[in-house]
Image 1 (cartoon, rainbow, N blue to C red):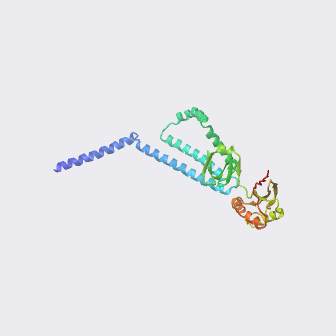
Image 2: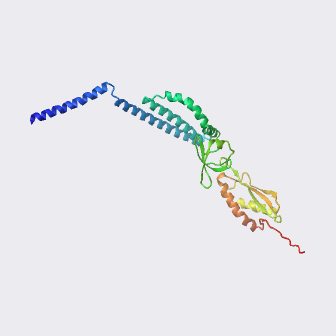
Image 3: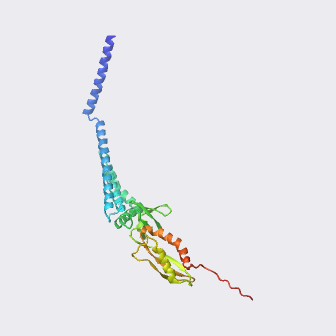
Length: 290
Protein backbone atom coordinates (compact mmCIF):
# COMPACT_ATOMS: atom_id res chain seq x y z
CA UNK A 1 0.00 0.00 0.00
CA UNK A 2 2.78 2.42 0.89
CA UNK A 3 4.51 1.58 -2.39
CA UNK A 4 1.37 2.41 -4.42
CA UNK A 5 0.92 5.82 -2.73
CA UNK A 6 4.56 6.71 -3.37
CA UNK A 7 4.16 5.78 -7.02
CA UNK A 8 1.03 7.99 -7.37
CA UNK A 9 2.84 10.96 -5.81
CA UNK A 10 5.75 10.55 -8.17
CA UNK A 11 3.41 10.43 -11.18
CA UNK A 12 1.57 13.59 -10.01
CA UNK A 13 4.86 15.45 -9.57
CA UNK A 14 5.92 14.29 -13.03
CA UNK A 15 2.70 15.69 -14.56
CA UNK A 16 3.25 19.08 -12.89
CA UNK A 17 6.83 19.19 -14.09
CA UNK A 18 5.66 18.31 -17.60
CA UNK A 19 3.08 21.16 -17.64
CA UNK A 20 5.64 23.66 -16.37
CA UNK A 21 8.10 22.51 -19.04
CA UNK A 22 5.45 22.89 -21.75
CA UNK A 23 4.64 26.49 -20.66
CA UNK A 24 8.35 27.34 -20.50
CA UNK A 25 8.95 25.92 -23.96
CA UNK A 26 5.89 27.75 -25.29
CA UNK A 27 7.10 31.11 -23.95
CA UNK A 28 10.60 30.54 -25.31
CA UNK A 29 9.15 29.63 -28.73
CA UNK A 30 6.94 32.74 -28.99
CA UNK A 31 3.77 31.64 -27.20
CA UNK A 32 0.99 34.01 -28.60
CA UNK A 33 -1.39 34.38 -25.66
CA UNK A 34 0.62 37.16 -23.93
CA UNK A 35 0.90 39.05 -27.24
CA UNK A 36 -2.86 38.89 -27.79
CA UNK A 37 -3.47 40.03 -24.22
CA UNK A 38 -1.11 42.99 -24.56
CA UNK A 39 -2.66 43.88 -27.92
CA UNK A 40 -6.14 43.83 -26.40
CA UNK A 41 -4.98 46.04 -23.51
CA UNK A 42 -3.45 48.58 -25.90
CA UNK A 43 -6.61 48.54 -28.05
CA UNK A 44 -8.81 49.21 -25.02
CA UNK A 45 -6.49 52.05 -23.94
CA UNK A 46 -6.70 53.63 -27.40
CA UNK A 47 -10.50 53.51 -27.33
CA UNK A 48 -10.59 54.97 -23.82
CA UNK A 49 -8.24 57.79 -24.85
CA UNK A 50 -10.41 58.50 -27.91
CA UNK A 51 -13.48 58.71 -25.68
CA UNK A 52 -11.72 61.06 -23.27
CA UNK A 53 -10.57 63.33 -26.11
CA UNK A 54 -14.10 63.54 -27.55
CA UNK A 55 -15.56 64.35 -24.10
CA UNK A 56 -12.97 67.08 -23.45
CA UNK A 57 -13.52 68.63 -26.87
CA UNK A 58 -17.31 68.53 -26.43
CA UNK A 59 -17.25 70.30 -23.04
CA UNK A 60 -14.67 72.84 -24.23
CA UNK A 61 -16.73 73.75 -27.30
CA UNK A 62 -19.89 74.11 -25.21
CA UNK A 63 -18.11 76.46 -22.81
CA UNK A 64 -16.74 78.46 -25.74
CA UNK A 65 -20.22 78.71 -27.27
CA UNK A 66 -21.60 79.90 -23.93
CA UNK A 67 -19.02 82.69 -23.64
CA UNK A 68 -18.87 83.78 -27.28
CA UNK A 69 -21.51 85.69 -29.23
CA UNK A 70 -20.14 84.62 -32.63
CA UNK A 71 -19.41 80.95 -31.89
CA UNK A 72 -22.91 79.53 -31.46
CA UNK A 73 -24.06 76.22 -30.01
CA UNK A 74 -24.89 74.96 -33.51
CA UNK A 75 -21.32 75.68 -34.62
CA UNK A 76 -20.07 73.88 -31.51
CA UNK A 77 -22.21 70.81 -32.30
CA UNK A 78 -20.98 70.69 -35.88
CA UNK A 79 -17.30 71.07 -34.94
CA UNK A 80 -17.59 68.46 -32.20
CA UNK A 81 -19.15 65.88 -34.52
CA UNK A 82 -16.44 66.48 -37.12
CA UNK A 83 -13.70 66.11 -34.49
CA UNK A 84 -15.39 63.01 -33.02
CA UNK A 85 -15.58 61.38 -36.45
CA UNK A 86 -11.89 62.05 -37.14
CA UNK A 87 -10.80 60.84 -33.68
CA UNK A 88 -12.77 57.61 -33.91
CA UNK A 89 -11.51 56.87 -37.43
CA UNK A 90 -7.92 57.28 -36.24
CA UNK A 91 -8.63 55.14 -33.17
CA UNK A 92 -10.18 52.31 -35.20
CA UNK A 93 -7.31 52.32 -37.70
CA UNK A 94 -4.83 52.19 -34.81
CA UNK A 95 -6.65 49.28 -33.16
CA UNK A 96 -6.73 47.31 -36.40
CA UNK A 97 -3.02 48.00 -36.88
CA UNK A 98 -2.24 46.63 -33.41
CA UNK A 99 -3.88 43.33 -34.33
CA UNK A 100 -1.82 43.17 -37.53
CA UNK A 101 -4.65 43.90 -39.95
CA UNK A 102 -3.19 45.48 -43.09
CA UNK A 103 -5.40 48.31 -44.34
CA UNK A 104 -3.32 49.02 -47.46
CA UNK A 105 -5.56 47.01 -49.83
CA UNK A 106 -8.63 48.62 -48.26
CA UNK A 107 -7.23 52.14 -48.67
CA UNK A 108 -6.24 51.37 -52.25
CA UNK A 109 -9.72 50.16 -53.03
CA UNK A 110 -11.22 53.31 -51.53
CA UNK A 111 -9.86 55.30 -54.46
CA UNK A 112 -12.20 53.58 -56.92
CA UNK A 113 -14.96 53.16 -54.36
CA UNK A 114 -14.74 56.84 -53.47
CA UNK A 115 -15.54 57.86 -57.03
CA UNK A 116 -18.59 55.61 -57.07
CA UNK A 117 -19.72 56.79 -53.65
CA UNK A 118 -19.16 60.40 -54.68
CA UNK A 119 -21.84 60.09 -57.34
CA UNK A 120 -24.15 58.06 -55.11
CA UNK A 121 -23.85 60.41 -52.13
CA UNK A 122 -24.03 63.76 -53.89
CA UNK A 123 -27.03 64.87 -51.83
CA UNK A 124 -25.38 63.86 -48.55
CA UNK A 125 -22.10 65.57 -49.45
CA UNK A 126 -24.02 68.69 -50.47
CA UNK A 127 -25.90 68.66 -47.14
CA UNK A 128 -22.59 68.32 -45.31
CA UNK A 129 -21.09 71.40 -46.96
CA UNK A 130 -24.35 73.32 -46.56
CA UNK A 131 -24.21 72.46 -42.86
CA UNK A 132 -20.77 74.04 -42.68
CA UNK A 133 -22.15 77.19 -44.37
CA UNK A 134 -25.06 77.33 -41.92
CA UNK A 135 -22.70 76.97 -38.97
CA UNK A 136 -20.37 79.70 -40.27
CA UNK A 137 -23.14 82.19 -41.05
CA UNK A 138 -25.29 81.42 -37.98
CA UNK A 139 -28.73 82.35 -39.35
CA UNK A 140 -30.33 80.82 -36.25
CA UNK A 141 -29.56 79.36 -32.84
CA UNK A 142 -30.99 76.44 -30.88
CA UNK A 143 -34.31 77.65 -29.44
CA UNK A 144 -35.02 80.25 -32.16
CA UNK A 145 -38.40 80.37 -33.89
CA UNK A 146 -37.77 80.45 -37.64
CA UNK A 147 -39.43 80.20 -41.04
CA UNK A 148 -37.46 78.04 -43.50
CA UNK A 149 -39.29 78.33 -46.79
CA UNK A 150 -42.89 77.48 -45.89
CA UNK A 151 -41.89 75.52 -42.76
CA UNK A 152 -42.09 77.16 -39.32
CA UNK A 153 -40.82 75.89 -35.98
CA UNK A 154 -38.37 76.12 -33.10
CA UNK A 155 -34.83 74.97 -33.82
CA UNK A 156 -34.10 71.91 -31.68
CA UNK A 157 -30.76 70.68 -33.02
CA UNK A 158 -28.46 70.51 -36.03
CA UNK A 159 -25.94 67.90 -37.11
CA UNK A 160 -23.78 67.21 -40.15
CA UNK A 161 -26.75 66.30 -42.33
CA UNK A 162 -29.97 67.91 -41.09
CA UNK A 163 -31.73 70.50 -38.94
CA UNK A 164 -34.51 69.46 -36.57
CA UNK A 165 -37.44 71.79 -35.85
CA UNK A 166 -40.37 71.55 -33.45
CA UNK A 167 -43.59 73.01 -34.88
CA UNK A 168 -46.14 75.00 -32.92
CA UNK A 169 -48.27 71.87 -32.45
CA UNK A 170 -45.19 69.90 -31.30
CA UNK A 171 -44.48 68.02 -34.52
CA UNK A 172 -40.88 67.01 -35.18
CA UNK A 173 -39.69 68.37 -38.54
CA UNK A 174 -36.37 67.18 -40.02
CA UNK A 175 -34.89 69.06 -42.97
CA UNK A 176 -31.61 68.24 -44.68
CA UNK A 177 -29.07 71.05 -44.63
CA UNK A 178 -29.21 71.50 -48.40
CA UNK A 179 -32.90 72.40 -48.29
CA UNK A 180 -32.35 74.67 -45.29
CA UNK A 181 -29.51 76.63 -46.90
CA UNK A 182 -31.32 76.75 -50.25
CA UNK A 183 -34.44 78.39 -48.77
CA UNK A 184 -35.17 81.83 -47.34
CA UNK A 185 -34.59 81.76 -43.58
CA UNK A 186 -36.61 84.17 -41.42
CA UNK A 187 -35.56 84.30 -37.76
CA UNK A 188 -38.09 85.81 -35.35
CA UNK A 189 -36.03 85.28 -32.18
CA UNK A 190 -32.58 86.58 -33.11
CA UNK A 191 -33.47 90.26 -32.62
CA UNK A 192 -34.27 92.13 -29.39
CA UNK A 193 -37.45 93.80 -30.66
CA UNK A 194 -40.27 92.66 -32.90
CA UNK A 195 -43.12 94.70 -34.35
CA UNK A 196 -46.71 93.54 -34.10
CA UNK A 197 -48.64 94.11 -37.34
CA UNK A 198 -52.33 94.32 -36.49
CA UNK A 199 -55.33 95.93 -38.14
CA UNK A 200 -58.65 97.16 -36.77
CA UNK A 201 -61.62 98.03 -39.00
CA UNK A 202 -64.24 100.67 -38.09
CA UNK A 203 -67.32 102.03 -39.82
CA UNK A 204 -67.30 105.08 -42.04
CA UNK A 205 -69.77 106.71 -39.65
CA UNK A 206 -67.41 106.34 -36.63
CA UNK A 207 -65.14 109.12 -35.42
CA UNK A 208 -61.59 108.16 -36.44
CA UNK A 209 -59.84 110.19 -33.72
CA UNK A 210 -61.98 108.54 -31.05
CA UNK A 211 -61.16 105.13 -32.48
CA UNK A 212 -57.41 105.82 -32.62
CA UNK A 213 -57.30 107.28 -29.10
CA UNK A 214 -59.21 104.29 -27.77
CA UNK A 215 -56.71 101.91 -29.37
CA UNK A 216 -53.76 103.93 -27.97
CA UNK A 217 -55.24 103.83 -24.47
CA UNK A 218 -55.76 100.07 -24.73
CA UNK A 219 -52.22 99.18 -25.82
CA UNK A 220 -50.90 101.65 -23.24
CA UNK A 221 -52.21 99.30 -20.53
CA UNK A 222 -50.01 96.45 -21.78
CA UNK A 223 -46.70 96.45 -19.88
CA UNK A 224 -45.07 94.22 -22.55
CA UNK A 225 -45.32 96.95 -25.21
CA UNK A 226 -42.09 98.94 -25.53
CA UNK A 227 -42.04 102.71 -25.38
CA UNK A 228 -39.18 102.97 -27.87
CA UNK A 229 -39.99 102.80 -30.74
CA UNK A 230 -43.35 104.39 -29.99
CA UNK A 231 -46.43 102.42 -31.06
CA UNK A 232 -48.00 103.51 -34.35
CA UNK A 233 -51.79 103.82 -34.64
CA UNK A 234 -52.85 105.38 -37.95
CA UNK A 235 -55.45 105.09 -40.69
CA UNK A 236 -54.16 102.53 -43.15
CA UNK A 237 -56.76 101.91 -45.85
CA UNK A 238 -60.25 102.81 -46.99
CA UNK A 239 -62.08 99.62 -47.86
CA UNK A 240 -65.44 99.06 -49.57
CA UNK A 241 -67.41 99.07 -46.35
CA UNK A 242 -64.87 99.88 -43.62
CA UNK A 243 -61.81 101.90 -42.68
CA UNK A 244 -58.68 100.03 -41.58
CA UNK A 245 -56.60 101.38 -38.72
CA UNK A 246 -53.09 99.92 -38.55
CA UNK A 247 -51.72 99.14 -35.09
CA UNK A 248 -47.92 98.71 -34.92
CA UNK A 249 -46.53 98.36 -31.38
CA UNK A 250 -43.09 96.88 -30.58
CA UNK A 251 -42.49 94.02 -28.13
CA UNK A 252 -39.83 91.52 -27.19
CA UNK A 253 -39.95 88.37 -29.37
CA UNK A 254 -41.17 86.27 -26.43
CA UNK A 255 -44.14 88.63 -25.89
CA UNK A 256 -45.29 88.69 -29.51
CA UNK A 257 -48.09 86.10 -29.39
CA UNK A 258 -49.36 86.83 -25.82
CA UNK A 259 -49.87 90.50 -26.73
CA UNK A 260 -51.36 89.61 -30.11
CA UNK A 261 -54.01 87.30 -28.64
CA UNK A 262 -54.84 89.63 -25.76
CA UNK A 263 -55.29 92.63 -28.06
CA UNK A 264 -57.67 90.73 -30.34
CA UNK A 265 -59.68 89.62 -27.30
CA UNK A 266 -59.92 93.14 -25.81
CA UNK A 267 -60.31 95.44 -28.81
CA UNK A 268 -63.98 94.78 -29.73
CA UNK A 269 -65.50 95.42 -26.31
CA UNK A 270 -63.15 98.36 -25.74
CA UNK A 271 -64.23 100.09 -28.97
CA UNK A 272 -67.90 99.36 -28.30
CA UNK A 273 -67.58 100.89 -24.83
CA UNK A 274 -66.51 104.16 -26.54
CA UNK A 275 -69.28 104.10 -29.14
CA UNK A 276 -67.14 102.66 -31.95
CA UNK A 277 -68.09 99.41 -33.64
CA UNK A 278 -66.59 97.08 -36.21
CA UNK A 279 -68.49 96.70 -39.49
CA UNK A 280 -69.51 93.43 -41.07
CA UNK A 281 -70.62 92.62 -44.57
CA UNK A 282 -74.27 93.25 -45.27
CA UNK A 283 -76.46 92.67 -48.31
CA UNK A 284 -79.22 95.15 -49.12
CA UNK A 285 -82.06 93.65 -51.11
CA UNK A 286 -84.33 96.07 -52.97
CA UNK A 287 -87.71 94.77 -54.05
CA UNK A 288 -89.30 96.42 -57.09
CA UNK A 289 -93.01 96.03 -57.47
CA UNK A 290 -94.12 95.56 -61.01
